[in-house]
Amino acid sequence: MKTYEEALKEFGEIVAGSNNIVFFGGAGVSTESGIPDFRSVDGLYNQQYDYPPETILSHSFYRANPKEFFRFYRNKMLFLVAKPNAAHRKLAELEQCGKLRAVITQNIDGLHQAAGSKTVLELHGSVLRNYCERCGHFHDVQYIKDSEGIPKCVKCGGPVKPDVVLYEEGLNMDTMRSAISFISNAEVLIIGGTSLAVYPAAGLIDYFSGKKLVVINKAPTPRDRYADLVVQGPIGEVFSAIDVG
Image (cartoon, rainbow, N blue to C red; front, side):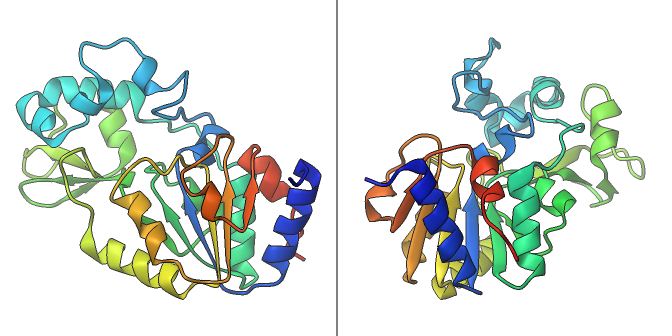
């Protein structure tokens, strides 16, 4: 079994040897920016609330109890002071130098774009986008943060909904098709900061048939046995160890 240092060295060699890399990431990428993981020990699923977070963040709850939904959403889902960490920044560098083709993320915080990444596929949407369900007018995240109760459209007074995929809602099919295309054509697929427990997003990994599968996560994942390299460590630290050159 490789030591941590040996795994970091091999990771650097894999990245150095490819110009067709795709990154697939989850909540663990953003925890180092201070955004809690739903399923971690200190995550949202461990917080005291009237309903479990997965209930509050469902489509049916949003429709039935929009005021309570937004009370939770403002308090627990919006981290506007969070900044990109070392992993976000290194991924942006890899794209800029022509090695990384796309970032596919389950996160909704927009930190990949804030770090400079251009090709970012957001499987679960983004808290930065909000739209009126009546007229479609766009509202930024600060408007949602500053509003009270159910946010209303500044143009028509209709209800404003965050552009995030709630439980019971389907993923955007155009985004899914793009993700499948990038993964199917990738030479190297790096999975980082995800337990691969959320479907259908986690099922996208099945489309990879390239040369090297790398898994970076603090805890074991169901895909470790199929990976060419498994690195167990903080994702920012792991990415900081590679030289973009």
